[in-house]
Amino acid sequence: MTSRLLPDLSPWRSSADFRLLWVQGLVTYFGSFMALIALPLQIKHLTGSPLAVGAMGAVELVPLVVFGLYGGALADSADRRRVILGTEAGLGLLAVVLLVNALAPEPALWPLYVVAAGVSALAGLQRPALDSLMARIVPHDQQTAAAALNSLRWQVGAIAGPSLAGVVVAYAGHATAYGVTVVTFALSVLLCLRLSPAPPAHDAEKPSLRGIAEGARYAWSRPVLLGTYAVDLAAMFFAFPNAVFPFLADDLDAEWALGLMYAAGSVGSLALGLTSGWTSRVRRHGLFVVGGAAGWGLAIAAAGWFQNIWIVLVCLALAGAGDMLSGLGRSTIWNQTIPDELRGRLAGIEVLSYSVGPQLGQVRAGAMAGWTGTRSAVWSGGVACVASVALLAAALPKLLTYDSATDEDASRRRAAGAGPAGDRPDAEPGVLPGV
Image (cartoon, rainbow, N blue to C red; front, side):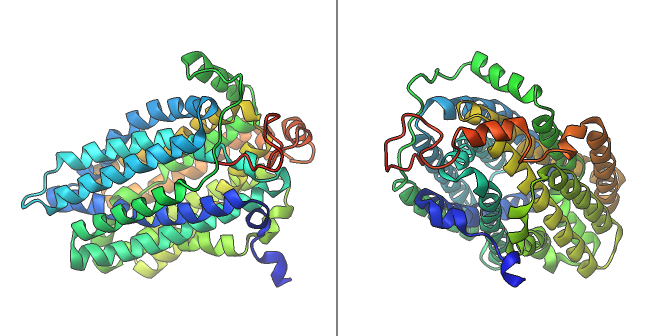
């Protein structure tokens, strides 16, 4: 029985590029989460304003939208390895800017917003190239297992990064946290250099508005895909309170627990990931999307309602488990149904669906906290999340009835030979068409 709960390691065994990407991502996530905690804390220390911290979301929004859509088209027309390598190097340079600013006698506020916007732009360019690779390098029937393993990698970084970042910033300062980030990106670039080339198809078109529009029309014509995007956007917009965690910790008289608050959601996700073996045998992935998002909202509402810090941490952990379950469903549906020739452009839309929501959510949480108070901003957002998810599920019933064994798009992609060396007719025999 225990073996049926343990993570399915099939993608790790079947794909060398998957293994390399997994390790590279773990290194990057660790450094990224160090900066993720240090940056809002530095803004808080410089301004003392929850609105100033929440404004990070507004600064990041436009670059994410523009470069996320362009990055999707770029992923379908350029060597994805080069896209990943170039953007990873750029992110490392931005970490250097944070480090230099933190070492100045009087650190300035404006570079923090400039770097936040730059990180958002580079992430928008990179994520479609990364996300669109999974459908190539992992077999069709291993997509849920791959999503679970990728989530485990993310959660390890999300737990270790924030937990250590809180201690590092408190005892060694922001500069040390940024220095760790610089080192991790340098290691990540070295790992990216070992990735296999991923050239586009011979007849791939250059990035264009017409190509982006083609991907958008495809997504709009598929109610299941549309549902995955809409549910995630709603959940993150209404119930993403991370920007106000420093102020929630103050309200609860638990400043010492700030790092734990950032890490708690990842603890819940990790617990689900470590027992995710059963998810590989599920075919109704739309239920994952809706049920996980609703669970996320309920847990966030509870976290804003209770006053005991330990109960709040448990609620945040439960929210993380719900978010991971929803994410497994989304990732599986995307990789099982989207044609490879559109995968990059649809990945660009996916970047918007799971990134724009949190950015807007930060703005919403910061503004509501300044208006009604921190705790009410958190619990009311959770309630609104549950209500919006329920309305979307009722409006898009095909999402709830999705079945990977009977869905037409999933069957068509399975018949096309999804997985290593199967997605591209021009793939060289014996060569994994990976990153």
